[in-house]
Figure (tube, rainbow, N blue to C red):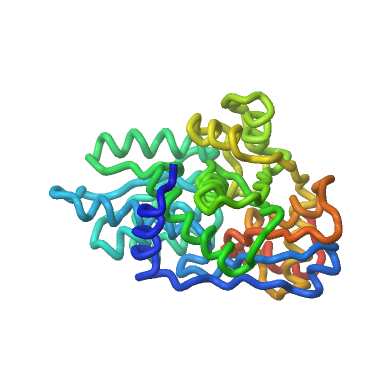
Length: 321
């Protein structure tokens, strides 16, 4: 459970490195959604994604310990790794980041630029995760999971900003990778005593969290076959699933074509190019059968770290995967 004290501490820590990110209503976008639509621009953080908030809180707590660690290690498809690298650099800690083969070139380059050692291993995130945990033991490094209370507290600072900026919201759509984002939004809603519905959005090719929500328990999948790399997970975290079952209103599953269309729509109506996961919440709003005129909705543009070839394809309308 997120306390007011934990949120205040996280806000102070994150605020040293991350200015409040914008939250806008874009008229052309609202013509397409048919609702009042606020876009929370987490693409405006120093790493281009929301994850940096959590990494800063996690690293700060480690650095404040009597015996700081020899270094940090994490597995990622990109934004979590950039968060860990950025936060480690700010505290003078080495960072090792494990990514799967064929990972985003732009995100790989960014992690290296933030000072991380990049290790390429595995055909998907799960295999990278297993390799990272083994390396943590071998090298005596602190493993930074993708879901942790410190990460949730850090990401909650962005959720709190959203409610301060937008005012009362009926629905917030949140992309779900391993759950730190959506759990942060639920925690802030509950802490503030709001009635906002929180809707999770996943890719059709990586439905583990939608399946887990429906079953009321973790339901892993054998694959996560989607170009939406930020949500390409197949093994859910039990604590995150329990929180989602208790506090999420529903899940929306998005096809590959609809994810690309959401990217295109965000670009053409706001001139902000989201990465695939960054457009997923907009895709969720557009596909939600509960959407109706007059609702006050928020979508989380969770990141803007997109490879050049995909940017060109989306902007030009060439949507071939």
